[in-house]
Image (cartoon, rainbow over all chains, first blue to last red; front, side, top):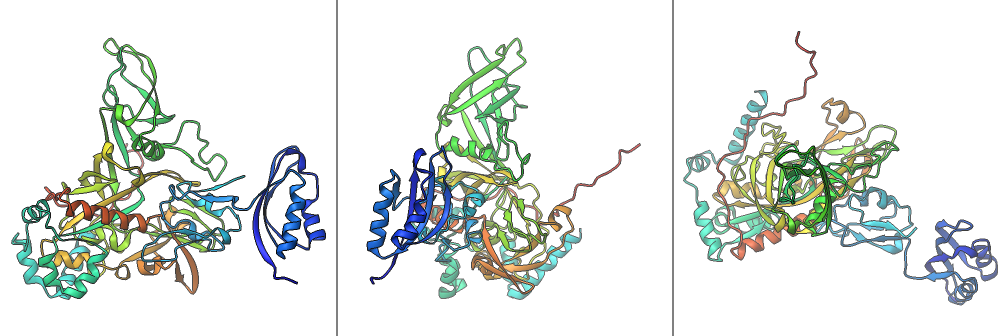
Length: 139
Length: 428
């Protein structure tokens, strides 16, 4: 069995695709381990789902091919939480509130705040505490 | 009075510690090693030696105080953080027919019109009309005075709406128009209090989350916030206000401004370390500058959840190296600067005066402090990153001969304490 990998994905659900148990099938039929960070999937509205899927590359490919049959947009690079470099002043207010250190100051000498997207679990604490509106949520 | 005595006591202790009372005496008599005129001539000829407050520390360690004092002309200091007591005077010029504005709003943010016909004062903390504030706490305060000031500097088109009661000479009763900063006759920033010499570290001892001007503070001391550039901060590099005074030229968000007075709540007679470094708020500066010359990156509206609006500002102040002692004080390091840890859950709002502990900026900048055996995550509202950038920008301007120094026309008071507001019964 080949080694498993993890992909962070953001799925966009148009109005009509909310009723199908897509995640259930990813787990049951494609052997994928699913870790949902954040979801907003409401009937009669468009929805978003941010999750990690872990499995063999082959299973992930098959699982995503299955997801694509539902008119669901798979976004490999888009994130539910974004940081606008331009708006960030590097004050460091967020770092004490970020539970995973996705927002951190790697070099104390410069004080620069760095955002490591891979570590973000989308708790949205940074959006609440940033005085400059540098962090934002896609949904 | 007690504060003044404490202050002199500290200074005497400092003189003894340094063993330089004789040299200092010479300096006090005005026979400094260098003069402002000499330094300005070197700046104009492009030969000035300028270092930032960060660079100077190691340089003096390496070169020695005496040699460095002869060689270095200017040390640049800087800070970038929310400064609520900021605002600006704007002059709109006259419409036809004319109006004497009696109430006015820019982007629905109320401005003060109790001055001449088309002059207004826009304050940084003013909320936008209709903002629910803390009606449903914590309020978000997405847009207010600080953001209007940022948008003005950014050159955005903004809406002016004004009303008037109408007079014979100013008959118009209402105006709605759109303008940019370029359309204004003047846009002069006038900030009654900037550049706090030192500041509190806020924690929350209560059992509920609180929302303050020091950010969101989680219960039971889960996190702490500080707000100072520490070793880069202007008044921490000139703790006795020997070179920074009324008339000192400053870099205010990219414009060449100046100190026009002591800042409000200035309290030079504060508690100090034996080296003279204040261990509490202490001194402040009132600053002014032309907003048309400012850069947006250093003028930023701030929304503090549950508290309100503020304005984050970048300020750089050059310190002329007139003698060895002035240079020595610019070598202050984060580890030598202490800030008081205050409980904003009870002690700050109730004004008990209690200080839980004192911690150094070296500890704070590590991102964790330990108090009573508990580790507390530390965040900042002051950007060291931006302050460092400003210190370098100012140093470059001085090296290019574009920024000359100004000798203060008056010293900042060193014997003042901050008076409380006493609640009295009406005298019968």
